[in-house]
Length: 145
Image (tube, rainbow, N blue to C red; front, side):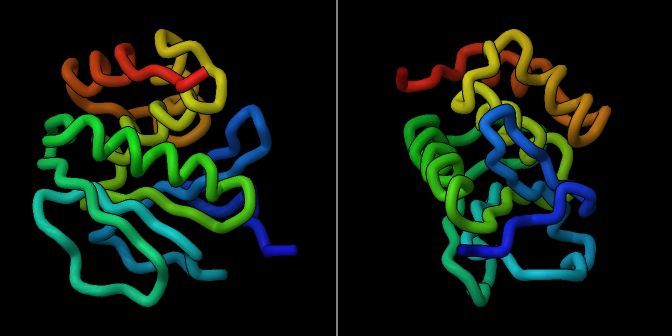
């Protein structure tokens, strides 16, 4: 049995299914506590190697992902792994791209796309998902089922 993220820890979002995902800002220090077992990093360029399994998605600040199919694949992997591992999603500031990704995870978890941004703003950060095109990206994101 793996150790889950503590629901009271900064940045931890619990989805309706019970899956927990940590969102965070890469420019802030790594939070105390257990390390992620998997992370998806939303940046304009790849990160330096890190000590856990990870994936980079090309996603410039204030934008949407450069490759929607790659982003979908990475977020689906986060959603699946969150059922059995500590996973995190992060960008430089932890709000726009990270909030958008978390809202997409909410859609994968069964929240209607039109409600996902509100869910993330209520349970993660009131300023998550910063731009109209990021909100539109979430609104068009679909669960495979």
